[in-house]
Length: 593
Image (cartoon, rainbow, N blue to C red; front, side, top):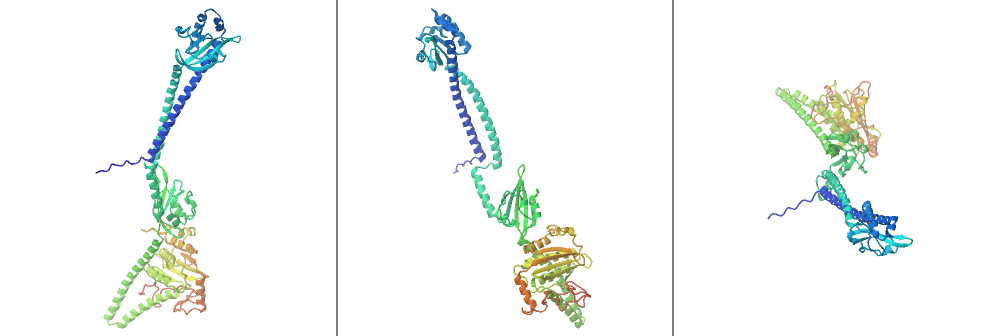
């Protein structure tokens, strides 16, 4: 059994059109009825005034007074009354004696008969009007006395038939109906045009559907964790959900404010103000890495922009760690290849009966590997930094770049506070080293020099390269996203230094760039350390803390290391990953760690 189909409620625009059409029709009909009644009343009053004026004119005429004094008044009064009737456009003019006997009448058969109507007020000397049905039918008539010398010698009645009055009103009603029909037609057309526009704006939905859509809209805005921002055609904020406020760091009411007034970074503001669509663009705020998508809303004209924001701060950090792990994997693959070559060499020496030479060869490789590790740890005993430097040294070797740690470096294990996470440390120093290796790669005697130490409650991370350097005019732009002197790869460029600055600013530090002493660029990040961490460092420097292990820092926090070489005339020759009996080589190049 099929259930009867329930008709869909009319759209909101259709309902409004019906209501407005009925309202206009009722108003026009009411106005027409009121006008008809008013015009009829006014027509009757006008007819009464006209009849009274004619009756008084006849009563005051001297010829009428003279004719009444004759033996046969009708002979002179009848022609006069008919002439007045034609000239004044009334239906009758009746002149009678005080008893009401007619002397004149449009129908001559009625002459000599008694007047049909009231004459009492006129005999008392008072003129009046009335609507009465006489010999000619219903009429509006006026009755006035003819007085001479204080006495009433006759009466005059002039009138207009109600039929004639009705005809006059009908002519006016016909015109009124035409005007009312025109008003109704214009009102209907205007209502249709307005409701057609409303129908387009509401997409033909009825009130219930609009209400449900609003409820779903509000629920979706608060349920979506991604940021959602809606801008109007003038790039003012029309809507921002909770996720958008959190990601952009907005706490005040911003609806109605321009995007330019939100205090966002310039590149992000430029993306939001752009008239073109943006797809998966990465932008940085003070504390987050955001993926921004924008899409203009059009409907015959630009109505605004829809912006979605995704927080990829953690994802970006994990991507950086994955890139580092990928680099370590490549370095280990290269080390495995070299280890296999060395192993084949030692096996061949043994097969040739040169066992002592094989032992010497293997021992030299092991000493080199241990020396490299000891040199790094003696300069930087903090485990995260040491591991990062050892891994970057292997990457640098693969790229033909020499990575050295300067003699000024010295950071003890446990010195860094918990507020400075290992991830932030890797982000800052790792990206600075990667940037330096990109700049130095391909140059003559490519080198990257790393310096890490603490100075007056500040952690200093300094990285210098032998590249082409940074133009002072671009000293600020170099930290902006998408700015790079290198060609963009598949994942883009110009994000590393922007992440470094973001992390440094989050820790209330500073990041600067200048020309390196030997040419190239030198980047320096300075991160404030809590007083408790520096107190621990001072105790360690004064000897009150437990004795440091091998390779630990000196009192200055910048350990010279027992195996460091001093250059001629210099007290700060950098740590170089070298073996006493081998040419200079990058860390981890000659052995396994």
